[in-house]
Length: 255
Image 1 (cartoon, rainbow, N blue to C red):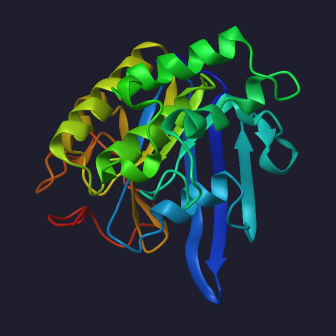
Image 2 (image 1 turned 180 degrees about the horizontal axis):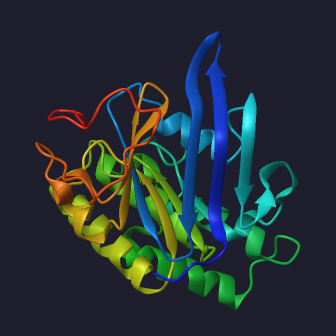
């Protein structure tokens, strides 16, 4: 892949939750068109890194940039689609599937007024995740996997250049996993840059260009996905182990 300006750049990023250090100086670069997975055990700092990137968690040290702009000065959020960890799509607010997806389009509208292009974008996003036939249904009537599809459609409806997804496959039924994998494949083909937090690669593994493995808030590995280099025996020269990593990748790291 040719070198281009990073879409995401974290340098020496530190972040705390309360009095507890969670990120301990991580570096992360994602270039245009890449699909990068953030992997690691629970508590390793994966989700905190994502939340620090989009401004939900304050950074105590280091720099964060999106599309070459310091995050504190970044305003063009329509370029970024974000899918949080699995939750109810409406957050307890009565709404239809189409209304939830439409909320992701507002940044692309003029003065919040929906035009034909906006309505077409909502319909297309719902078709992408196999939920077009449920557009008028209340989100309270959906299964967990269907909620996740709606959240992904909401992220896609603005046609973002960067898609950030936090555990998109967690607790999702097999049928929805297949739909989500197919949807993501289509986004990758269209040139979307993707950063995924995953507990395991699963059906998304063929799409992953690079894996960044975190342990205790530090980068342990940045290179091919662990399964591509052999999780039991990482081969020298085929991956990069961060110089501050305490130990090599071992079996069970992602469990």
